[in-house]
Amino acid sequence: MKIQFTETQKFSQWWLWLLLIPIGIMPIYGMYTQFVLGESFGSKPMSDTGLIITTIIVFLIIGLFLIMRLTTKIDATGIHMQYVPFIKKNVKWQEIKSAEVVNYGFVGGWGIRLWTAYGTVYNVSGNKGLAIELINGKKFLIGTQKEAELTEVIEKLNQAT
Image 1: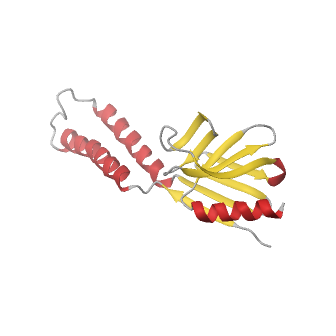
Image 2: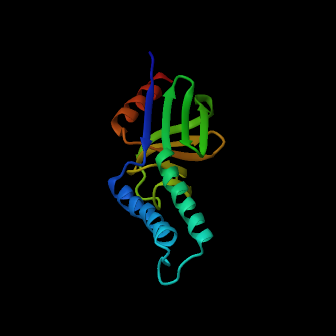
Image 3: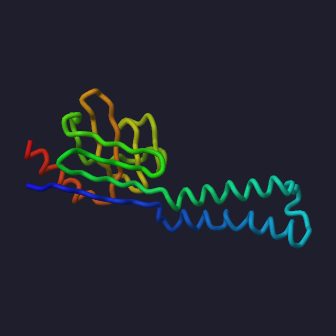
């Protein structure tokens, strides 16, 4: 019996991009105002260097949201999770005490959440995930948008062992 699960999630919430796009436009407009029109941008204008650095930081943050993704793979060897560009975990079945799909509720937002009741939570959106407890006592949770499919895979794996 071949059991496999794969899911890749990205930050694709419309409201997030509705916030990020204007945040990205503002420093561009500031640079246009200050460099092209020769006028100060705002009532307390930044230096040209400060404006350039702020623009770079804003676009690095927006770029980070564009490349971030959470990939989960489950196969016969174990659970493989990668939260690009931050974390990569590969856990063998022999290291796992329990794995269960749960509704984890609100854990303070999305991204990587430390020190929750589930250990470290890796999520992109929603409130469902795979709660994993290792034999050594460590815990972590991987968010999912495919709750039913993931539950089915975990149930098959539990029956197989």
